[in-house]
Length: 269
Image (cartoon, rainbow, N blue to C red):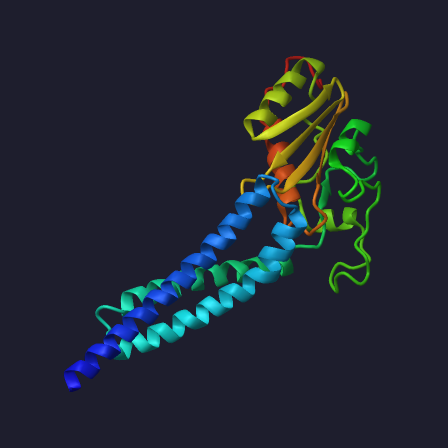
């Protein structure tokens, strides 16, 4: 009888460990699936990112983590050899997902609540009418002097995006020592395409393009203004949410790549 009782306990522990592993995997697949269909545009960004990922996702992950932790405790007492690896795998998967949400909230705290970065706010860059139409009615407005609402952040509320850019994105500065000629506009376009941008329009004085990330498909619209003695860059999110530093990263990358382009002889002399 004791042997039969021990065997039943091991079977129950093994079944619960399997259940915990399946719950963890299903939760991970749910979040991955939501990310994929949102990226493809099959569901809206509000539904995919805000509701399913940020709304339902953390609750599913927390439930999965609790089940995995209980399963691990049971496994260690009932059948550590057979059950514990499955339960431990469930803890690792659920813990990793929970860590991902924790990193997201840390990024929210570490970055200002903006979705717009530019190298020049004294003479703001604007988008063409075509680009505004491409952005759509749901995109945040492209303003000459945007400001963070006072009730949105204790640290940044009431400040202009220009002041926030100055404090948090040091590379977002007008390029004055590396002029781009009309003959080099095609090189700028090629550089943008090689960097993963879709270019919408070009002229001797302006290039407009969009970058789409590989996860949820967030889009960042960019305009590059080319003057005889300077170059300016602006990147604005198409989805109305804090960009977690993404636009600063985009602008910094493009500024560095423009500076790396060769200067034609006699230009800027």
